[in-house]
Image (cartoon, rainbow, N blue to C red; front, side, top):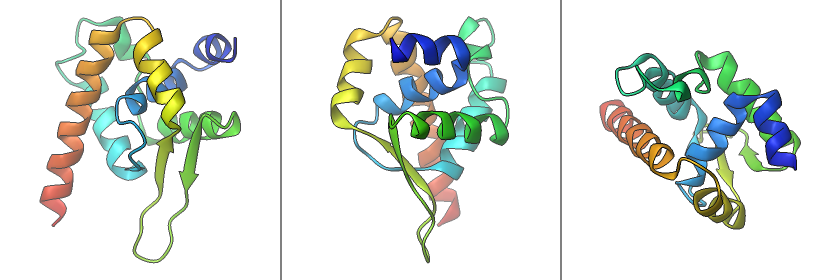
Length: 127
């Protein structure tokens, strides 16, 4: 019920939930996630997919999606402290439910892998 309402009212939040679900309980830096997801929404991988419109189109879209998911306690937001950048992570049971029960498993898995590849490339270039 909560998921269907979330998907109807904010498809970008649902997309973020799908992508983060594939990372299990790993904490993901929001800055890296934002630039990776926005790049995917504008890239060739989603050119002919209706999922393109669910992905965040800019940093503002992603921040709104993060706030929506956090408001429903679907993700944890870890604020920036000292040298640590802000991060988000999903609960393990919710992650497993999303990966196993939601539609379009293969498409979301491919998107999550592509997003993770971009995140890793960004992390390596920042070192």
